[in-house]
Image 1 (cartoon, rainbow, N blue to C red):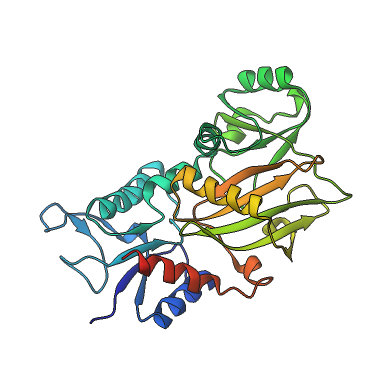
Image 2 (image 1 turned 120 degrees about the vertical axis):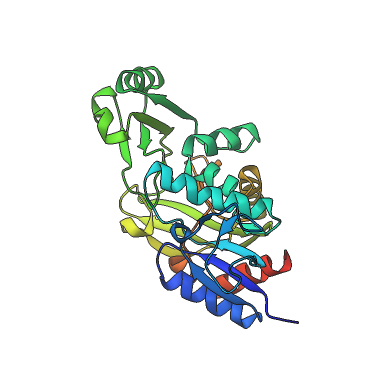
Length: 293
């Protein structure tokens, strides 16, 4: 039986891409890294796609894993996600699907889907224009967190204590996504990241920091963590709510111990998580995807 061929979509040939390629090889599969910017559409071909790789011109990969989507204009990103949509329509297992990626990249839609599924998550408000945001902040009172609608790794987060703290519209591309700030117990700030894959919690860590932004890229420290059965179930439900086959689910407990989902990441990094767990994370992801082929 020939080795299964996996399209490994990346935005950069980083540590994660290398770990995944090695993990697929250990399972007898071959991962071929490529950029979505190199892909496109050609309706004269049998499957209608331009897809560089050993399966070209009319073959398809056995599966696809999306580690990253290279950035670009609105039109470029739309085209790249359309390629993932097309692969799914052609019957290729795609982790994560374009739909799941779209849901998770858009923080407003993530919050909407979590709330609709009855999953505990801090209240959120998403409006256009600074005036509408100021009205919202004044009405809600207390401390809110302003997040870029499309953002990751803690970049661009602001604590908002009143309308005067809001930045200009241009800084937020006209859209203000606000989430209730959650006070954590103890003298420092901390939350938890649980990696979910194939409906199971694979690994978890605590992210701890002196600053309220605990993302590792912003100075947070990873620590080993064993989640409770209840927190594990919460993370799995959150991934299911957005349709993610694998995801990094961020959970925070307030000073009363009430656990809430902050975000669901459809293209999570796990280098920091791997440093505090013995679970071979890339291997678990590769094995789970191959079992779905």
